[in-house]
Image 1 (cartoon, one colour):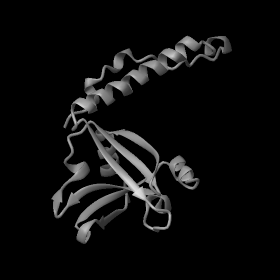
Image 2: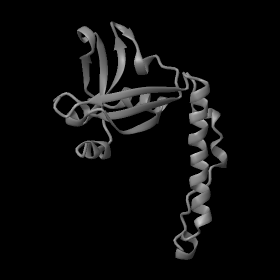
Image 3: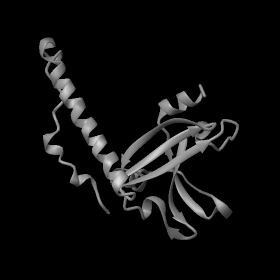
Image 4: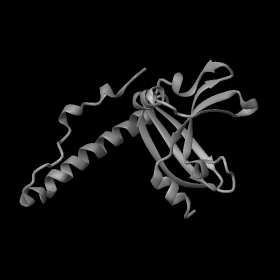
Length: 157
């Protein structure tokens, strides 16, 4: 599996941790910090455009009237097995796992997670709920807590 080691993290600016208010107001330091991370995001987007396997994109769609939808359960599904064989997070070679959230046909938001971090999370989080779903309930998936802000935003849609 590929990983985030191809990104040069050594040149990332450090967050201004000074306790001096005059130092903390240095816009240029904060601007540089933000711009560096924006460049990293654009680099990921460009790599994803050129290499479809760089980013795995999953969309969690739901209707508020469905009691099993992410807005009502507070979870999104991460598939790891399909029809008795490893699939999804267990087999992806992507560097980034993008989880998009849609409510009643409207985009709510998305999170980009380093695939290796999400794999470590689902493999090492005790008591993470596992459910079966899909056609003939032939797919197994972890239920991962959805970002609380998306749950709140979905209430407005």
